[in-house]
Image (cartoon, rainbow, N blue to C red; front, top):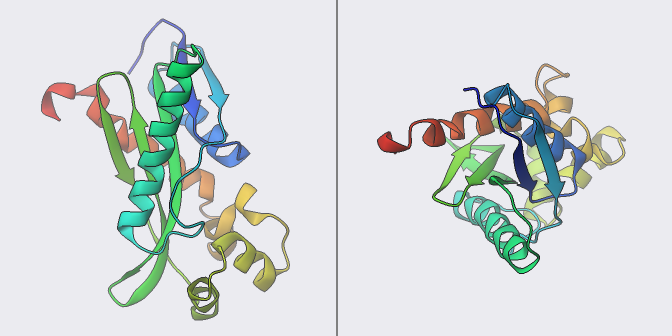
Length: 184
């Protein structure tokens, strides 16, 4: 989709992976627009490591709502607000990680979901004990702050995919509801 006007988005995070995923997603969708990004550290109001679909979706939606309120209260204009929430869920008896993206503009709000990746049992056990996925991965693979790099997905896929790549694809797919609003 092309457009010729500047496009401003708010990303509900200070995490560079999320910021760049949103920027790249919107730049690819609006190729003739100059995309500007403002990042806001937005709370999810769910556990630090969501462990089911409801918590994960709610976390992304809550972050968008926070940013919309923040923008309204601070006279900050944005064409879109984007939030990501990484979660864990047992799918077909297999603990898996994935992300939910929430994209909103003044008229609508839609969520999408990324591909999922099976988690090793020792990682899932740590999550059940209250650890977040990033620190659990750091401990197992002796990495530092993996969640602001390739993430568990990058590590476990040996770089074939990354946290950023799945955020980009999920965001691009979620934007379809904005490209064809009459269908959604």
